[in-house]
Length: 214
Image (cartoon, rainbow, N blue to C red; front, top):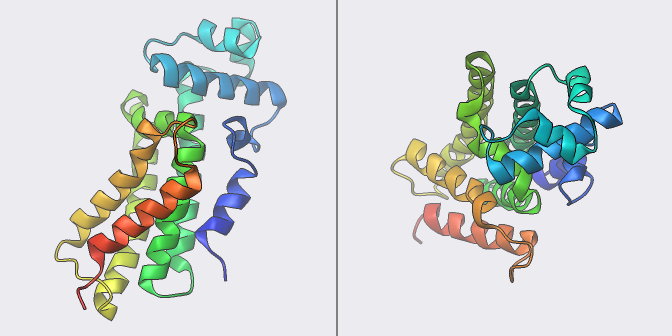
């Protein structure tokens, strides 16, 4: 059975921040992208300069423009890859076998774990949307719409089967996604819970939120 956890493994191949960008080539472009993630997360997009990014990557400012025409192009590349991975996780769960409760738990565990294990990347991916240009922003908003639709589909399946009691499916979908995404804001690798443990906790909370009373 294909699960969202399988999709996460295919997308990542590791749990450190740099491993989130294995598909970016050449190596210099990847170094710049990883450096941009760190700078944007630390200083914010608008306060970060291309010189800051190049310096973090150990490269000259001129070298950055060989791979990325603008700072906004870098942000778009980061955001597009991150949202593609999020969508893959959620659609894999929605399309999987099992009950609606099992698929929703799979989606939440994996989505939360990604946001915890890659919390620095996820903060940039999720919270710098408004810094994108109009065309790129519209592209990312469409990916978010599809992620919302994947979770909504699982919840609707549960309502139809009688597993879930959810009077407001759109509102509940938004609440579930917001709960998961917010993990990137507060997660600390030195905290007392691992990404796996946070994922399991949040899956339990979400199922308690939607499950029909016996």
